[in-house]
Length: 213
Image (cartoon, rainbow, N blue to C red; front, side, top):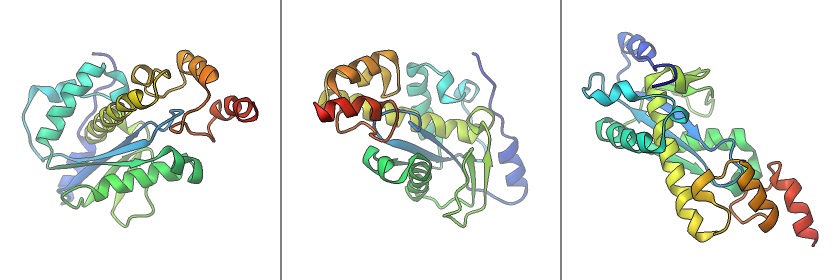
C-alpha cells in the first residue's frame, strides 16, 4: 500500500502525560466546488486489536471500497466519534477557513465523551479552551487524525452521492464535487445549482454569464 504509515507517537506521548481521551480531527471537502465541508473527530481506545490498523492511511490515498471498510472498523472500535457539517451557503458567507473550524467544533461537540486533548490536521481551534496540537500533514503521519480523515471523507462522499439524485446531470456521485474536467464541463453547460459554492472560482466565473443570460 502506497503512502506513509501513520504512527502513534503523539498519542503515546500524550498518554504518558496523563491524557486519556485524545481526539483526532480532520476535514473533507475544503477544496471542493460544491457541498458542505465535513469534519470528523474520533477518540480511539488506548489499546485495541484488529488487522485493519495496518491498512489505515490518509483517506486521499485509499480506494473508496477500502475507505468504506475502514470506516466500519474505526467507528466500531472508537470510544467516541462525531461529525460536523457546514453548508455551501455558510461557506460562501464566512469563508472556507472559518467554516472548516466551525465544522471541526461541531464534530467535537457531537462526541459522546468530552476529549481532554485534540490532535488536528493543520488547523488550530482558538474557539475552544481544550489543549490541542495542529500537525502539518497530520492525516499522513498521525493515526488518530488519519482515522478522522477516513470518517470525514466517507461521510461527505455519501452525502454528495445522495445529492446526485436531487441535482441530476452534474455527476456528483462520480467526482464528489471537486473541480474535475467533467464537473467543469457540466457546470458550464448547466450553470451552478444551489449546492455550488458561488464564491469559489471557477464557479463564480461560470455563474456570471448564466445570471445575465
